[in-house]
Length: 380
Ligand code: LLP
Image 1 (cartoon, rainbow, N blue to C red):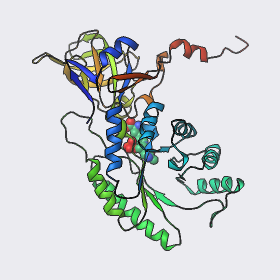
Image 2 (tube, rainbow, N blue to C red):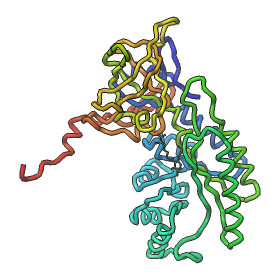
Image 3 (cartoon, rainbow, N blue to C red):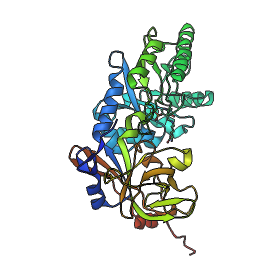
């Protein structure tokens, strides 16, 4: 569910017309609804309210400070995968004791930062990383248990993303729970299990819905019932995916005998998911179409000179006119965080709406700023 709906014939984010935002800041831009963010966090965390649990929002899905701060205020922790995300989590007000550090390639500097910050846990993902962490922790005077400087407190798994069935979770949680028993038998005091992220979201209007958090929670709780562990989760997409849309303006309609193209001002540098993962995003007109308005089958493409520059392929949509605004739905997760400036296009801005208020939470990084970051060497 989400809080983007037509009011008086115009798409609104909560109580704000996205057309008004477009008039003010131009296009393209990402727009997030606080109400959706908050609801999704509450529903997910609420599903585990009856067991010791911590929801560490996976910052990689959307690490805008305003998004993270919104979740932090509701009690969210953070799952970070880099020095940058750790800094962002701290800057958004998440306390170290709610931060997990995941990722297979943490550098020595990142491990040192995590130790210095005193975060809740580092998810060690290989033996060499364990050695490296042990050396770093011991050099900082940390001293515990068998591995110098390290205390084994839990185990973590993450089996994938956009998972739309419960069976894979069920299987994985069973393996994890066996492992906890084995580790305890070996004398490790396992206090928590981190069940990762990965619960999928609906991307298609009206298509089958992925399991709700309550059903997922039932599976997780059943598998871990006898473990006496705190449950930690690292959800990203389920929290922010449907809470964001990408707004774009139609530049041209180009028709050929075999294909129609709707050329818009957002491109693969702004939202790379369609071309990178063949991902599907609904495309909706901002102006509510009249009943019986004509529809066309078209490719919705951006201005970048690459055949991979598309937002939708072979899609039946309401026939737009140049100048019309379109909303690319469900773009809150892995959208803005994966955006770039290819073709020297300004970095796409982000807007957060709350009720009838809205704010620019990342201004557009203009072309002049991009050029100014380059340096000419002395010999030129
Ligand atoms: N924890 C770990 C260790 C992860 O690697 C991920 C995502 C998550 C949690 C969060 O998973 P989620 O709840 O969001 O499914 N860029 C891709 C998705 C990559 C996901 C990578 N790992 C996309 O746009 O679909």
